[in-house]
Length: 280
Image (cartoon, rainbow, N blue to C red):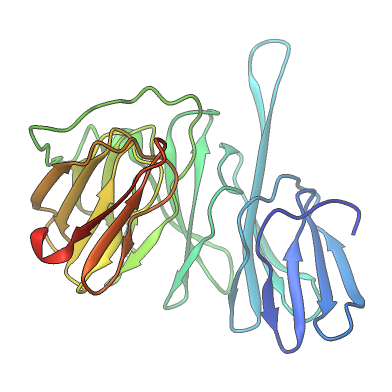
């Protein structure tokens, strides 16, 4: 391999398959460490772990060049890769993706792959995209910035806006009951989107979040924003059951949910354990 790899590789039929930061797909024998194959996606900055489904690896990459005239030249694409040979099965280009396709591991459900990117911006317009897993055909796209101005958004009273981000990322996606959960820190709204149709099921104003929600008892979502506000949300209808200021400024990681406790950590070095039965 000619460059470093930041992400966790996949394992398939005795081999390790991964992607480097420079877009080099490598396949290594897990027993001997021998490099079996290598190919190139010709797109750098692969930062998310590849998704392996039925012998196919799914991953995206993107970057943007700022031109002298102030415009941007975007380079974004999403790939399906044969896990045995490293060859590209299909490639779908996204000319509006200036960043983000490389940020998050995609999710898969019943022949649909969902990923995300930032549309024509290094900071804004987080956009979800669903593709046919066999062909790469785009099934739907949803720009969260535009959607937040169209759909009815549930807005709890005591939520810190705190949209003072220094850079935008796409938070990891979560799959739940046929839907995609997404909360970009640029918009500060948790969306539940039907994975088949791309229709917004509900939307809740959470303020700036970095991490994804976690699921309690298959019914409730728990998510914490950067100001330390903890939310308990009904996963079916988006109703906010509880908000709790924890006093812990929070970034990146998601709450850990056990049978009896929700465990949270933050930027001030504190760890707090909250009984589940006090939240739901």
